[in-house]
Image 1 (tube, rainbow over the protein chains, first blue to last red):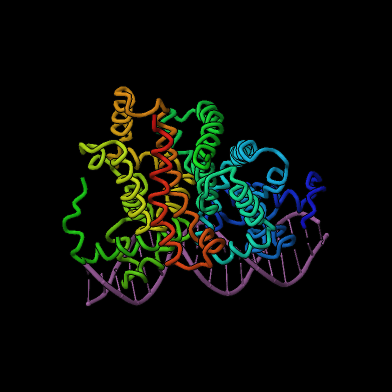
Image 2: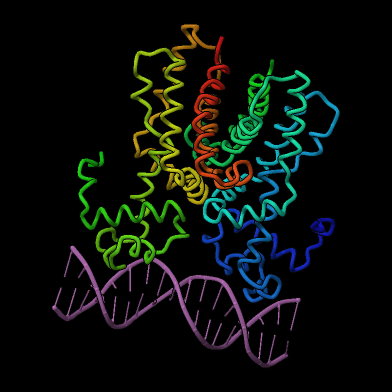
Length: 206
Length: 206
DNA sequence: GTCTATATTGTGATAGAC
DNA sequence: GTCTATCACAATATAGAC
């Protein structure tokens, strides 16, 4: 859909978008002013309106980007011919990696989701993310007797929960349990990739 | 600490606080105006400042209340003399019940946590919530050989993740998987109490 | 305690010069 | 394309009448 092949070209429009991503995702729609974005981009306020008519439209552009990171397209891993348990391990690892690299996105999406559900649902549908692929593949494995009969929705929610929450609540967890040390918590999350994968696999094993 | 015994008396101050809770928790600090709160309380804007000097102070009062619902005090259940597995089942059930009754609080707290971590951490410390009690009890059970050797931090994060995320992401999950039907999703969450408890117990069983 | 009126600053957005 | 200047309005907060 969107042309990402030229995203490295730092045209003014790109500078605006990058600045908007940074500020919106950290502070939310209402917590962000056009002035902040302009400052971050090192340009004038009016230029924001020149490229993206309104704050709303600029926000939508940012949100479309963010939602891809919270509900990523998993086709690549899911459609490989590896064993289901290997897939889950890779899936959890890749997903947590992505979230760790975009640590403000989970709480941002959850917040905007609660403030404006319909807008966000629309955005989700437009993103091309399709849980049906995962569900179908999962049901197939159940039929083959490879895994225990389980509600795929519970499974999906479990995976998302275990991966997303530790990032969304990071600022508090890190302070409570890890003396607010970034490296220590990063290391803990690295270990956690295996913990979560094992946890999930154990729960669907026959 | 806080006198909650008179919270049913609908003095103007209480009306203000109730209105502020409702509006702040749904829309966040920056997404809320003093006018909205005044309208919700059915009074004048100036009265908000009369009772709570500033928007900041009013927000702190609301946040102190909210954080108790996301990181509740579990002493009651933890200090009973029931079996550890029964405790976990009760704990998960009670916790999810509380979250379901306060469905906007999780995303609210996570958002504010990321916007202003230090302020929120301070608020957390003042709340009297103490994860040490749970950890100590858990370590004791490991020593007694009742459960598998596990990092208690991973366990706590697992429990919080599995309980909080389905509420925080409810507006999207409900639309994607449950045709946006409140009753259907409530029913799913009721079932989920057992799913989560079993999931947790299975993961620490020897 | 509760109101009206107002001060002050910040907001999104547009017009128009260059 | 990029800037300055400005509009119309909303924000938090305070002063003062009752």
